[in-house]
Amino acid sequence: MNLSEHLSKEILAQYGVPIPSGRLATTPDEAEARCREIECTKYVVKAQIGAGGRGLVGGIKFAATPSAVRSEAAKLLGKRLVTGQTGAAGEMVKSVWIEEAIDIAHSFYLSFTFDQHSGLPVMLMSAKGGVEFEQAARMDPDVVRQLPLTLGGDLDEDALRKMLGGLGVSGNAPDALVALAKGAARAFRDNDATLVEINPLAVRADGSAIAVDAKIALDGNALFRHPEFETFAEDDNLPEQERIARENDINFVKLTGNIGVVVNGAGLGLATNDMIIDGGGSPANFMDIRTTTTSLQIAKGAAMLLQDPGVGVVLVNVHGGGMTACDTVAEGFALAYARATRKPPVVVRMAGQNAEWALSILKNRRLPFEDFEDMGGAIARAVEIARKGGA
Image 1: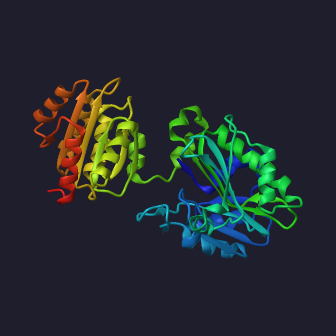
Image 2 (image 1 turned 120 degrees about the vertical axis):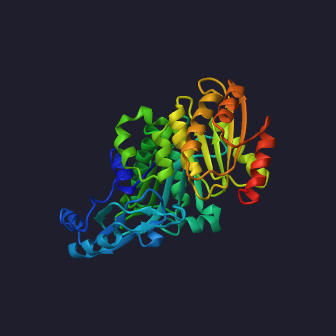
Image 3 (image 1 turned 180 degrees about the vertical axis):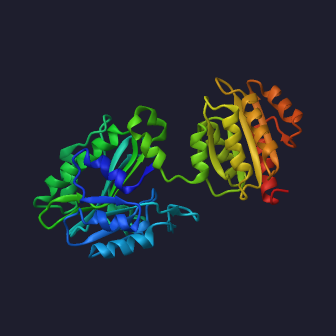
């Protein structure tokens, strides 16, 4: 779950990370009124969306007066921003964050995430922060330094100071950056985050450090440990399909392919998508039907795939076991198909608990589908149908 900037900063501030004074607004009039509560000589008006890259597409504006703040807010509110991280649909701007503009002597990049190879928490830092950081990192990966965290998620302060020295940081700045980084590391650990990113992390002329922009991604599977984030989840600017999936106890990520995938289990979902790609196809989604998901919830998840105009074929690949039996998935999918106005071809592979009964359900409901006993055959057929345009 990606948090917008103001929510990310709200969390970081609780851990002692300095942030600029700011206010949230949902209308141009409110933006003008709220900015008068900030004591500064220049303002920044920022579109609040979950994805990054908004600065490159006009999502961040500077304003010298409250009336100018109102004008810039009016241009952003209700606008759909399309960035490198949103996909073609973009994200709607429902609110703006107004804060004091910071005079930056030097910009850094700082983030905490998990190393994809070791699975352990790691700190990433670069002396080239700001909107051009991603391009700079792609052109020269060496601009990013790594510092592993301890198993408990803590920073090695001596190693961090050595890193800062290697980046040419001197004067009062090392103390300020160490304090800020330690606070951000605690926020990452305590809140079950998958990402805490501060970019730019600004050092001012006096050596003080401040988080000019921030982004936090929370692990949705850990939200049961954080009831305080329930309101954040309600406000999360999710795409419609992912919102429907989350409301129905399904883990779902929209992808760019044309093969809709209905799968129970994250491991099976990943394996299915890998096999689709190896077979020359392209999955339209990642899906993980959780063990507690009901047939009615499965129906709602399947329905959004059937109605997706980009889906040329649906592959139902289920291995019954534990709390999710094959017939539960079959009941849900049959219900969705019966109600759907759009009915792409369906390929089914059922194995494990109640597999035969599940296939009987689909046949008795007169659902047209092709049945395969093994994953390889089902996936190859789905790829073939998708290649022919869903025919």
